[in-house]
Image 1 (cartoon, rainbow, N blue to C red):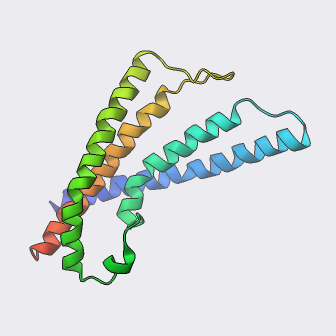
Image 2 (image 1 turned 90 degrees about the vertical axis):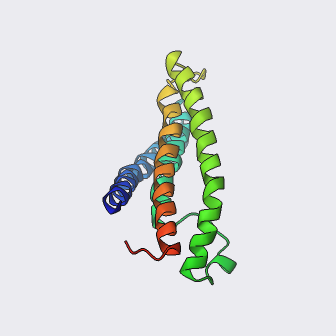
Length: 165
């Protein structure tokens, strides 16, 4: 069991490291647009759309890493004062809401991504880039988030039942 939890953690850490470089790309894209627009008076037709897609991928693919690091929002005023076993009980209870959320996004996002891929969907803008690669990011990113959530759920059960990692 520990090796499975370790593998899930490593996948989340690796994904987080890789996805973090999207911010560097986004920074260069936006700086390029500002220079092109305001200094050269030649705005682009592609930076806004591409930066929106990259930022969406960054947010979705970074979810598992954020969960691994404990960076998601919770009611820290109450939650932060609880003992580890009570925190684990709350997390086990709320896991079912998390599971419903992930299941819905994987189902609906997967359906949308499949239809988009099947039709080689494009954005319809003047630039008209393909959007099916970015639609595939949603089910993939939420699946990674689900895996990390499952690892957290198992660890919470271990805390509740006094097993050590």
